[in-house]
Amino acid sequence: MQTGADHKNALVLNEAQRLAWLRLIRSENVGPATFRDLLNHCGSAEAALEALPALSRKGGKKALRICPPHEAEAELAAHERHGARLVALGEPDYPPHLRHIDGPPPLISVIGGKALAEVRTIAIVGARNASLSGRKLAAQFSRDLGQDGFAIASGLARGIDAAAHDAALPNGTTAVFAGGINVLYPPEHGPLLGAIIDSGGNAISEMPFDWKPRGRDFPRRNRLISGMSLGVIVIEAAKGSGSLHTARFALEQNREIFAVPGSPLDPRSEGANNLIRQGASLVTCASDVLEALEGRLAPELPLAPDMAEPGEASPTLFDVEPTDSARQRLTTALGPTPVEIDELIRFTGESTRTIHILLLELELAGRLERHAGQRVSLVY
Image: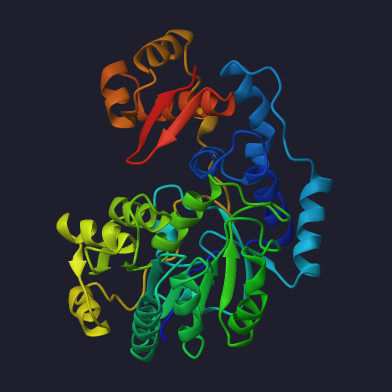
């Protein structure tokens, strides 16, 4: 199996940098996209932490909670006790395809081996209340694709996910958590998770240690499942199911979407059948998937992210000090309807750097929401 970990220019954080990255992503109003902008502009996570108070004040927030060192140190220690580690965007065993999605997590918690660094990864998702035939199909796809050198990604849920993980044990599989890396859901999948780890697979999460998953966290998890994969196979997905959310993320991330057709009399097949009607590839066996992926099986992806750590920083944030009139023009242009950042740049006549700084100020103040496709909206 070829992995992105073979790249010679992989980023490796030192202990102090890893702590600063963790403090920054755990600070109030700092999401993956904001993290990346801060690091690019400030040159390092430590410099970004120093810049946070001033940036949030300019955006209209009086006090921004910055993760203190002792909290980040405690989380790192908890990872170590649990046999987990924090992997940074660009490090050797960070999923290579995941780094290219919109807003990749700067840090992920990982337990287990390096199957997640496999370039040839396919996601298999579907119904929790799957039929026996659906489970058999998931296992067959997983087993056959594994024999062709693919790792399998899924969400460790009941039904299709569990069948796909179990069949992928000999060839590598990644379970993606919606909660913290130490919070197993569903709890009865402890033996399956143990088998995944023991066989050289792994579990990953972007959420803080001890985080109990909420309903909104599962779609966030699903974007990681699709993002780390070349494509997503959907088996027995009911209308409005989480599996269809995964397919939507796959579409936004320019991934292949595969759907296994089912009986029109079975509501568990309604979502997958609709995907086929909307243009997803109809598949019935692993060879269908391989045929559709032909030409997309690059042996290796570049590892270097567009961020300044860990070498010598070239901070650019303070090269430009936005004027009050620029702030006014931007907030006037923004509203509750998402607009593309490029549109804001054209409309305001301000430089790209100025607009990005102003957007950082607003987001850190809790007044900006980011959307897919490099779009933003104002929070009222």
